[in-house]
Length: 344
Figure 1 (cartoon, rainbow, N blue to C red):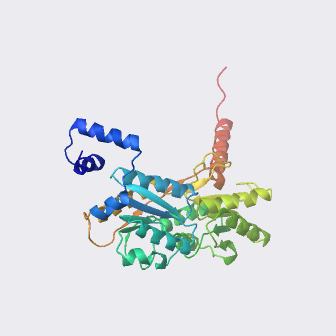
Figure 2 (cartoon, rainbow, N blue to C red):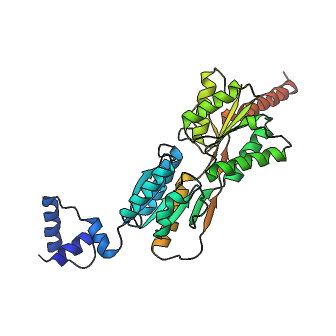
Figure 3 (tube, rainbow, N blue to C red):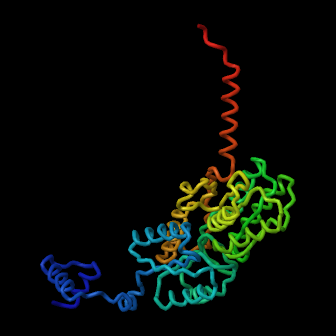
């Protein structure tokens, strides 16, 4: 059997008689043959591989984003490689170099910081790149992100609207655009309400749970008055919940807690967590769609930026639901009190 026939069967391109196809497939199965994608890529200049770099794969937000990215890649005949950078620029740089060496056709990146240095090789080699969730100065690429400023503004205004004034922001790393945008939204909401922002109620650090828990404990030890905590992502909120519970403080009776980004089991955590949720799956899917348009030459214009609107989901942890329950109960009691007695 000719090499051309075998090649057509493996690639799925070109006509092959059914009898010949069956013989080739049987031989492949018996020999355990695996096609050399790298060698095929050298000839076709297409590896069929695309990549995704995320800072915290254990975070359900990025897990969901990765699923959207993978589904979009697979439905367009590509396979996805995922790298987890642990919020470390040095690890991001190593992964970027590995992806270039692996001849990926393009890469989606949720960067670990605000520097273009870790991605310099991608830029120099003109590897199609799309930024997701976080912007990076100096990287001239398409961006798909949530409205961190608007979401933080709305979430802070919600807390203010139900009576909170001493609102703490437990933020992530200040070198990430998500952190700076969410702090800006928080500050703007406080400014509009005429509430002074005090530095003692602002805390920045890593985006990891343990660090957030440590920082909340320090804040509480300082005795600064806090009636509500705004976790800048789900890990920040979980860290806050741990710190409060270890001190025997009740949520929301003693301190309210809200989160930017939903937690996979947010509705199962007690008290149910109030969140500003982002469409993580859609974010990943759209990022891959933009990348494929670049790879396939369907779009060659200026960088595009898609900003997705988050959604406020109010649950028990902010106290609003309890407040609404009390209001309803009072209304019902009043209605009962004024209701005329039935005729005998």
